[in-house]
Length: 447
Image (cartoon, rainbow, N blue to C red; front, top):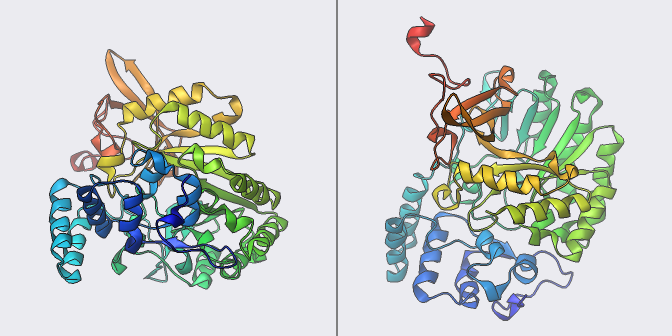
């Protein structure tokens, strides 16, 4: 890979610690990629709406700059000129080119963002728990056994993925953010809800926090009064985007000791690691980080969405699952790109998604077949595409609820009419029924 420090003279500090590159570096970074003036301006326009952030490790170790703009990791972290509707990009680009005031650019960016469904699947309304009549910010409780916790200091990432369904956490829109620093509120809520067995610490990326701050949030969950909490999960991209967090960062050892303490209480510590492409697993320090996290007692489960132009072929997924199993990780989910942000740009039709999953699944050993998918994390729950079949002379999608707001629906199969263009649950029409199992019956039937 080409050393990006030739492009942006921003050396790391003397300890070799994390260094981020944001929107103000974008023009210089794009010049290294050889993009035209028009394309660079269009990328900058997209970056006013959607967030951009990367770091020296991604730039130096993961991106093949000779293959830009087609390199998959480049496409994974750098905004693309056509990620948003052409009319919106052209309007913002015109303002940038004319030197328009920042206030005008921000206003137009806000207008575009509000059309991108920033919080899909009813997150802000349906998932928000309450206690004593007060809604609890920074918590989500969608499924009975699992609570999501968004620590305030963990609401950024080592680098942002262009497809990210949590993009609203990272833009200049305070009303769209989910976060809290009140761990005592979470603990009080958990004490009242013994049905909760798992807490997922998420973001952003919790591993952006140093060990002292992370401990502040994790230790209270180990209290004996919370014996019903069987597992603590950490949703993170750090193993792919900044593996030094667990090897050479100043607090790497302290962080791993905290993991060991979680395991010593008899609870499971699950790393929900996001890997979008095999190259994220390819460096020596990435392998070392995986080993150290596993040695500390964590189980690493891997997941990622199927992303057009990044990993939309079976060979890529099969290679990724094989490397993960060799490294002692557990392939867990292939997701469908959510209905938020630039979904139209990155989404793969459900029929094609099933073909990719099927072909990759068929080419790996049983140890890799722990993976589930393609799965849509939609409003009613996680809906898996089990296959395409012909039933009673009709071609249909065979679907199943892997997880559901209504536990009675978990594992229940159902059918949708085959549609080669459908990319999300809302695009599907029930087959052999007037509604899907998770839909309410018509009012007249209730009456």
